[in-house]
Image (cartoon, rainbow, N blue to C red; front, side, top):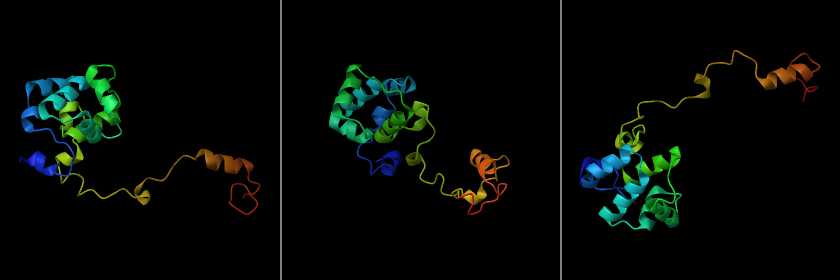
Length: 146
């Protein structure tokens, strides 16, 4: 088992490296030809339409069938990301940023952003302008304004 497959051990479907690095898969990914990507996964891994749908998530077997037959396509960014994550296709092959499973140490050193870290607004918000216009106390919050 290679490093990519090890990192993805909890995922339901990870296409093997031989398929991932094949010329056909590289061409299909570069062109974002998901009809061909799905067809390759189906035929070369033996994955059923149900397996493919489950790996991608929020997709039915009939939609997988429609994609393979060329009746429907995939254009939405979120769906493309789910395909990459579901099959273990590195982001760069589909023109996406690195996927979280590609680098297990990614973003661990970055602290989450707190609201306190954000800069203060220098321009009044619509709510504050409205409050100033209708409040009889000249913009100061008081019981009269509430």
